[in-house]
Length: 229
Image 1 (cartoon, rainbow, N blue to C red):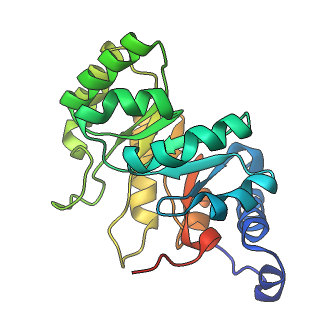
Image 2 (spheres, rainbow, N blue to C red):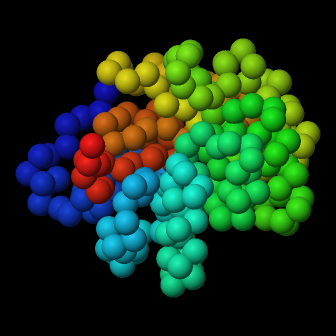
Image 3 (cartoon, rainbow, N blue to C red):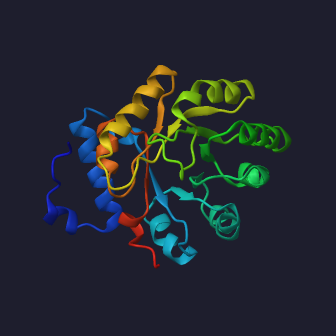
């Protein structure tokens, strides 16, 4: 679906610049503005010293999937560099909702009514209202988080009624399969429910996601390299 990037040109660029260039090129092919796509550098398991070069290069959006790990790294990084945006991209336990609301600017994994309630309570208590994505189990996989497709209308109504600032949908397609049909389905669901945000696409498929309307792509390995273990 996405034309091949010139491998020589891509190899000549550092990882951050390479990913940015690939996003920009794909966006232009799709008739979109590159600035409409937010690149989230997935920094989970990465120490602060590995994150610092991206911040120094001007990158401002990062993603973590564990509240406790993020609490250990990001308060100091955010204090040192105003304007950083921190995204929670994993499954969130309801008992961590207040900690997440205090630290994160965006929460991508709202997937059940109990979490909606916990987040709404935490937002009211703290006065901080991070943007939220409803996570959809787009491949209907038992081992993955996300609400069932059939439950999306009810969960979305519940989240809106609770006052959550829902800006879009998020999904992770099944591994080792063509992602495009799942991205297209998520985009249709978002349109059907009047949502502009689409959090989809990772290191192996973010160009396909951009072609199909992603507004946020979550890229780790292509920026930081493969995680140990």
